[in-house]
Amino acid sequence: MILKRTLRQILPDFIKTNIRTLIRTKELREFNSLERQYCVTENLMPKKDVSLSEIFNSEETERIWEESKKDMDIFNVPNGSGGVNPGDRRAIYYLINKFKPTSVLEIGTHIGASTINIAAALFKNQKKNKPVNFTTLDIRDVNSASEKPWEEYGTKYSPIQMINELNYGDIVNFVTGNSLKYLNSQKKFDFIFLDGDHSAATVYKEIPLALKSLHKNGVILLHDYYPEGKPLWSDNFTITGPYSATERLIREGANLVVLPLGTLPWDTKLNSNITSLALLMRKN
Image (cartoon, rainbow, N blue to C red):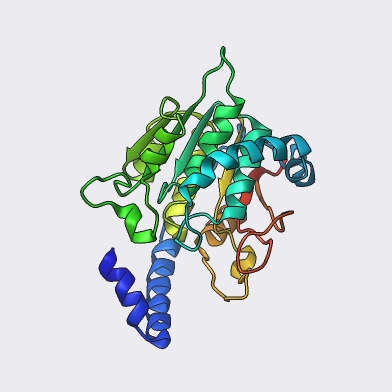
């Protein structure tokens, strides 16, 4: 990982562009060759039940968020480290507070930026007679004491260190493994956050499995969803996988609609309040 990071820093832009083009061409070829996947959407929350304005302008949620933020700020989780940006972390907290799930699955722990926000919101919402549980999965051992992968991204604490310092250890379970295999394990959740491998092929296979893993009226949240595959920010960067995957599923008849969160009432990245978060919802 350190070697890859060094190469990204020293390679000329035109070479990096050519490499990205080759990778995308290979991924597109793989994606187009996949067998059709079928979606069972009956447990997915319908779009008509969601008001983004109500969620992100809630004064009560803002008050609770400010309380949690004070605790999380001590870790100084950096921005621009491949993790979820601070504005998106806040949006995820608001979503958890609104939907009040008791079981959550996160695909893609990385440095734990979104992980601690999900755990904080769950902790605030838990009730004595209704315990909560949160599973966060990554293909890499994000808490490896020997490799210390979090240090590659400029953060001092591993995800599990932050969780334990916040006293959330009883509700959080870290898993190292493949997302598709885990989603096939028949476990059920109220809220699933897909933020792992962003290739179209993987997301195309993850979504049908995630739908089968939902409790009634469950929620699926996507990260790095770029509508029409177009840039959202001034850096002109795009990730096309989640958009391509959902568009194909919808084109093939899945009763799905994507609800991009769009612009938030607070800053996200690159001097904007735009987010790439999007809710995957039942169309009707």
